[in-house]
Length: 297
Image 1 (cartoon, rainbow, N blue to C red):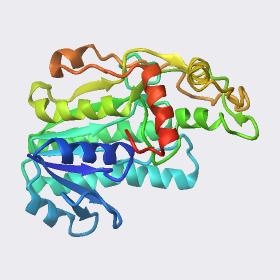
Image 2 (image 1 turned 90 degrees about the vertical axis):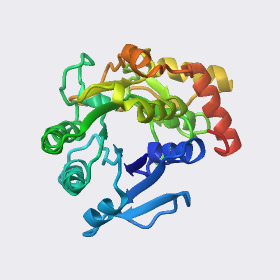
Image 3 (image 1 turned 30 degrees about the horizontal axis):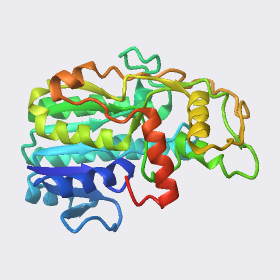
Image 4 (image 1 turned 90 degrees about the horizontal axis):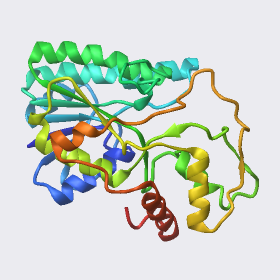
């Protein structure tokens, strides 16, 4: 199949492309806003005025929409970037896709769209609100052009080398910090999913999307939660180190995620997928990657 990706230069995008290039016969196309170096087997398309013409040439079967601007802030400059990246870009893409017959649009959202982790949309941040707002636009184009939409909601991803530091990276940084690393109280309960489990899920979804109902929402995690203090203690146990952390240095946000647990039961039923990497195993792998300079995933 012909697979078109956005967000190909990001953390998940690069890992997904690497996997698909080496483990499948799909033709891969990536939309980027600037010149980038990707695998030679990936056709790179510039996000410009010729986007529609390029898409017509490529005739994609599946679109995996990973691109987004992620921030918990909502300053004026952030607002412009959030709207442009998370709503405007996706809308322009959907408009361009009208000239081809795609089978499925895989929309990658965020667990922060579900503030109470109860399956009901209730965005925690403005970022999450823009992701939720895009769904209405996506539904309009899906109805207009008769293609399937699948929403994938990853939870807290870790492992490998991210394009920007996440909480697991910050905790590992605290091993060699000269001063205590400022952090929250660490009482948030999060669902941590290792990058290879996430990539394996996408592989199964690409091959099995026809089994998924239109507009279904697939929450992607492990189904288990740990608070940050538990994770820090596990890292100390694995590394035989004391993390230099200033717990409670950052006060709670007015609105923040305090509990996020992915309901993953139907992923086993629909796609025969379940996570293989426990948190302890994932942290051990992460520690080895840090020691080896990320030569392994």
